[in-house]
Length: 259
Image (cartoon, rainbow, N blue to C red; front, side, top):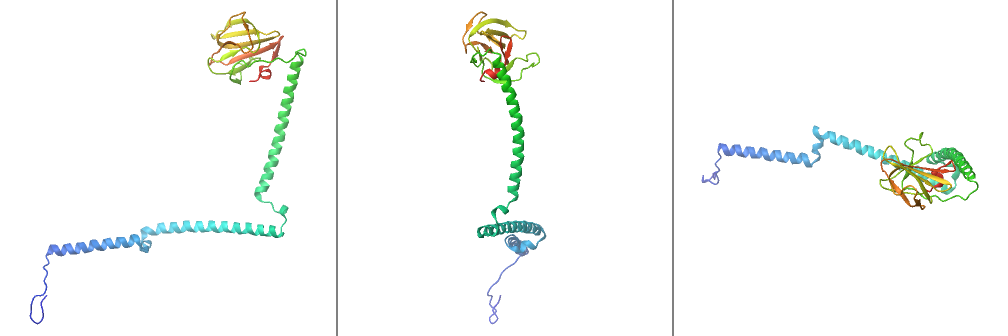
């Protein structure tokens, strides 16, 4: 740059080919950065093809949310209108019955019917069981009902061979649980079975108790045992089977023993 009157040099700049290319490249890079920022942080991105789908999805979600809120608002308005009419006395209380109330009434009726049927079945079974119990006690010659001791801790289960031992009650318990005598009496038999367990029979006069699948007997034949005294231990693998007899009449242990 030269001054017009004196032709004196005021300013000069020397531009090379490499410098010119560098300036142009830096200008393009700066332009790209500015355009990227403009697209990322301004609504301009919504007009681009890649961003329009997300905007449409967001609009659909917001529309569904508005519809749901509008439906809830309509229900609330109807509810408030009914409350206003009830408080004003325009609608009788008994004339308004919601669907939930109808369903509760129908459910209550169905449950009541099922309860009546179940109650009738249970009552019939209970009466039959009580008749059997009374007939059993009548066969005891009007004696006082004895108190039987709980022979072992465990749960009463179905016997392994109900056809063979239909008079036995099976009790499932842990291994080495003590087997106790149900009453005071004398051990009249201690016999080893084929499965290497023992069968112990105790005479209580007039009752007789039989204990099968005892792992190890604690008393010998002829020994006197008290009620609740251990006569052996459980096997753990086989359920303990118990029988109680009264002069040749079977007595159900489940009915005379509190398990």
